Length: 194
Image (cartoon, rainbow, N blue to C red; front, top):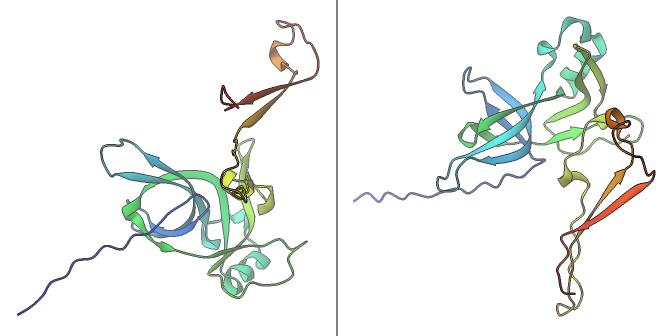
């Protein structure tokens, strides 16, 4: 008679993705950038997403509203990125979206497809909110780390290690420690055998 089929759609999330989600308390649709994935307990499938918030023009404080920003919000669907982050449930994600990060000094071309655009970021400084270019934001490691290419010969040993650099400037503890002056290098993740 009737056949019922059930299927699952698998959606991958990674840091740096832009999403549209609904706030759990108000059901308002919001745009945010995933900055991390939080797993509270490995035995349960519950995951949370750490999301960097955005604001629409009508959510900006009066001191930040201007005719130019209003026109950008209307013409380019511009939103404003915040440094503030929140945690949301994966179930609250509605869909992925595309966001154009605009740099007027470098970018002169408009991408073919984008749903939202961002040109400025809202910072809190000395208890006051300030607007700055979005390129002054803190980058996620996924944005500046380049995946290494696999070696052409798969039989060549591939070593991965990291280097920590420390500058000898103890700041508040400069009287408690003897300054040697210089930069210290610590190599980590090295195997005992090469």
